[in-house]
Image (cartoon, rainbow, N blue to C red; front, side):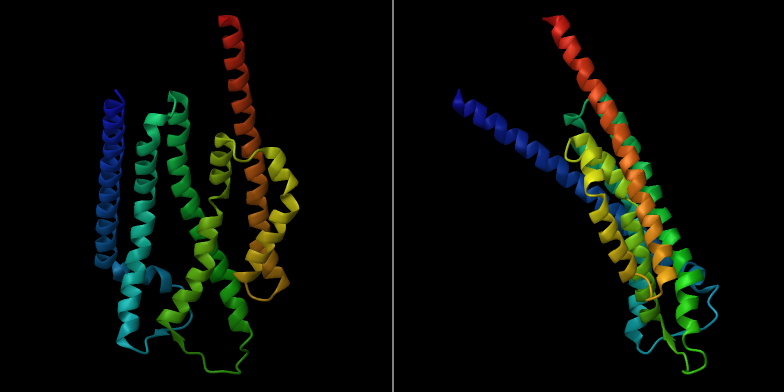
Length: 253
């Protein structure tokens, strides 16, 4: 009897690992496909990023050309694969969810993608319209400006990528609230510490100018406040479901 139980458990684990491997392979296939697409359309993508620049970008070695190709293609691959990866994770854990949890968690997938794109867009707008002009204004004719492709885009991604990640805070908060890991009371309790961390992050990804640091930090603080509101909604619905379940149990008894 114990031997049969052990065999069933081993088969169950093997089935899960097989399914996980298939989902990882599919995700990698999609990643490679978008990566290749990034290579194919590299000129259009690069042209989009440099079309509004008031200066030319230079390369100092052949390695920079290769670097920009792989970087642009990688960015396209990450953005294109994100919803697929989210769906594969959802599909893997779906058997352990209730019907309502399946619908709610499935709705997170487009939100994750849209918030990531929104963060990238916001970071890019802030960089191009505020941070870059401010830094260039500091020159004031003192230096000859020579911008290389690698250093420019590394600086650009240092600003935009954190925004893309931080814009996921509301969805992450809703998910953790639904799991019972955090609740609105906890989020309110640590609010001042969260503000402090977000201000530090804003300072790290923006120039040493108070106004620009506010421009960067304020949207992050607003995102945190939105996260608290969403957490309250999720927590309230969770409590209502729990109350309804307990009442059904009492009536059943």
